[in-house]
Image 1: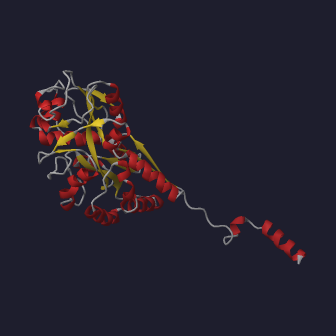
Image 2 (image 1 turned 30 degrees about the horizontal axis):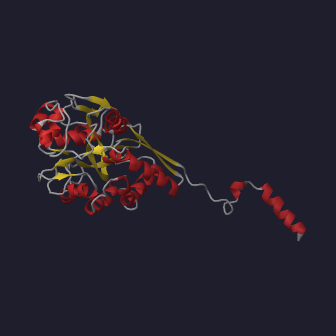
Length: 345
């Protein structure tokens, strides 16, 4: 018996391991996917991609938080596998793409007015006229009558307002100026809507992180950031008067309410704006954010990995968003996207 066992061992040692298909399982193919774009959803994307890698160690999704403009540019240049943006691509950009680009909404978020007013601890109410006036450079004092009339009992100081805005191409900027253009004809005419605009006044900071940092270190400043950045940095942010003339704070319920009407009238390509939405409970500066996915993916392994991730994101991934102050996608939108995934070839 010992002689027979020795012969078996010698035989195995002489064989090439590749001949032992039943003894050695083939390794899973490693798939690396690169993306870039919006800072607005970066906290949830970072969590999603990390969780997904732990579930499927052979799938690695790298994401650069460089702003929506940069994400669209890199997608068009073909240097990333997917882009991400808080601003839907316009027809001109879609026409520049080498292959059709599909928009997939991922979460709903809010952009909030953050401020640093020494000596004022109360929550500030902002009317549409106040926000437009400050960012146009027409309202220059914190105790301006437009601010005082909606903040009874708040001792607003006789100090100059310091505007802080994004210096890079930004979907967060697009959401902010999209709102301002809807509530201010002057803003729409003089400044307009884009991910990067010619600001009438103010200091520039790069990314939501840069704007948050500038506001925190600059007394009497006012800026705009994605909600989670305000919460993480323990910054004060105000209520905004909506289209129903109610002052509403950005939170899960009010952001979800803003998406209510849009969900029922969502276009097939998912390119929609929900700023200044109707409804007494709707927060007026809210938006979907999108992953930008090529409709044709030549690498079969990458295609499968991206499709599988999108399906996971629409199901399990949605259960993670509220802990980071994003709102879940409406069920109607999830159903539409589930069907749209079939458009990836």
